[in-house]
Length: 70
Image (tube, rainbow, N blue to C red; front, side, top):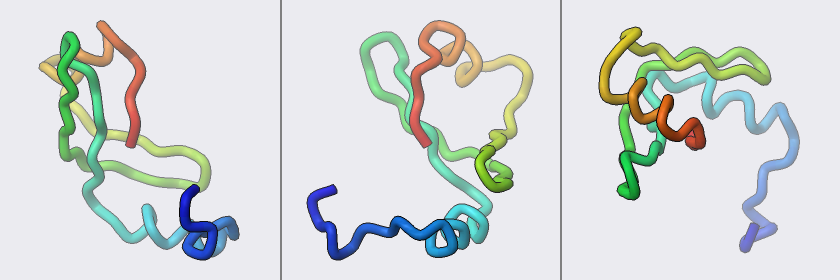
């Protein structure tokens, strides 16, 4: 991290951030192009659950390239 004075390392300081949100964005790769998609999600400790239909463009992108970031 470039700004060590802004780094949050204590879990009690990190938890409220995803815990207080309803929507997050996931970044996927569609062929060689980046694609950022807003999604509803659930967060519980060390696990993030993203809601999605069982089929569609997001699922197709994840099947082709499972690397993503939240």
